[in-house]
Amino acid sequence: MGKPTVYGADYSVYVRIVRLVLAEKGIDYELVPVDVFAAEGIPAWYFEHHPFGRIPAFSYDGFRLFETSAIARYVDEAFAGPDLQPTDARARATMNQIIGMLDAYAYRSMVWDVAVERLEREPPDETLIANGLSQASKALQTLSSLKAPGPWLLGDRLTLVDLHAAPIIGYFLKVSEGQKLLAEFPEIQAWWDRISARASFAATTPAA
Image (tube, rainbow, N blue to C red; front, side, top):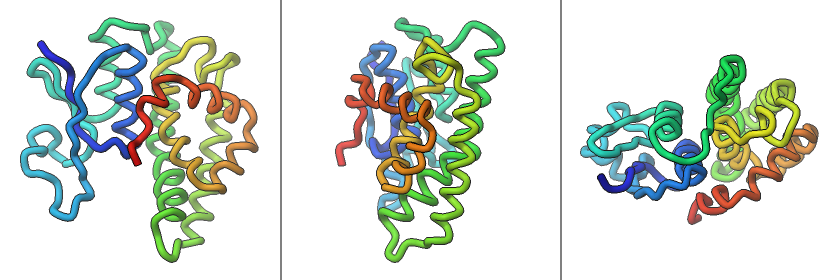
């Protein structure tokens, strides 16, 4: 049946989430580059994989998926390797809640409003950055309040929520404001030190 295929760019936070899940499951895969910011636009063929032209998309043995969380859950359930979702209904609901919170309230503020604005805009919009940091602080405070006792966000076992949070927070930490803010949340800082040291995280580091 061959290897699964992931479509997207290695710099993408959401592509990295899928790649982390595959790495933690021990699954070899092919990454087909798709640069949605290319000057010539999104390749026409890619809309067959994702009708909205976003990344990532996924295919395996004739089965296609888009949307990061759907891909991550499918990979966990369809392939051998360590289970990355809790069996307990409440723990699974908490996992899904945190993933939804990160997507809705953390990603935009941490990645685009703070990190991208600081690193890539000239001059950066300081008001946008300040508002992004305020939202990021609330997201980290919420994450800290939802974190279970133990090394990982849900306790003693690494799950999809850890792999979802890591690339988002990792991008935020490209800038000093992100590093300073994270340090205000010692439990999340300790979690970050732990997840960023994993082999899967090193293996999915963007090339540039």
